[in-house]
Image: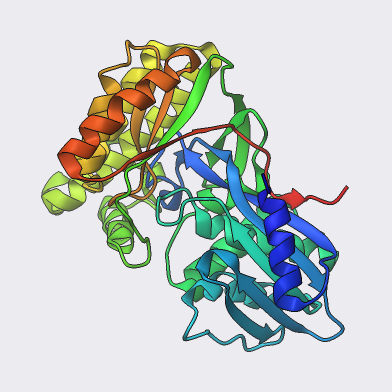
Length: 385
């Protein structure tokens, strides 16, 4: 069976009538707990997964960047690596890497031209960060090919700025940082206030199960930016720089100064930060009963206080929960409004749980959910030995 590396190499050869020189890869991610806390300078606990974006690249003599996207019917976009960087009105996907080009040029870097073929196996629109994987893979390639000397954190910050300022989504740092800095076999407890992170091993007896609800979502066109504004409003009312610095007692004191909706948004973030720290310790101690409780509370908070789940997502969480005996956890993952559920389940139960949930979910929703058993993987890197 052909591999995705062989496929992206063949795509390059077919489209550019040449052989590629180098290969790069950047993973997608799943967030185990800590949702909508990243842009509030809080804590998140994601891991990179063994699904990602692959780039076959050949440098050019000029400064033209040409990209063909295999997952989008071989749509192509090209632009010069010089300021100002323009939007491609016909290919919105290219904004994620055109924006990276702009950020690197603004930092004073000079970039070589490149021909690039891109192919990914992160389900698009599922909330597993296909867009961050794409931009981090491109930025990692630019960093290596042009010997820019950027750290994984600096690569992530560049990609975040590109998504915020060029692609138009006010995302936090989590997706880009875990894609750039992930560690095999580990989740990273990331402090989004100072970008520091600490690895926590995923216990060997647990499987990372990701269940794609097939309810498509898109951050730029969703209510993501609205939630961010509500969080900023709550922080302003409480007189703190971000919800990271808020407490439940301070929130209670300020309740009569904000709408019920804004109050509940803040309550989610404040409680989710503590749950995330506690979940990292639960993993370290293999305290699965506590992990189960924390992930359940996280989902309820996202459903009732942050209001980003859907009926289909809630159903999947309930179906998985029926088969867990406090020996794992399950919750919605990602920005919300569709996408995926993440479950940490005993490896010995993984296949049975997957088989048990798909039929009742189909009967209730007429959607064919898809399960993925993923490994916690390393961050973006060259694939050339």
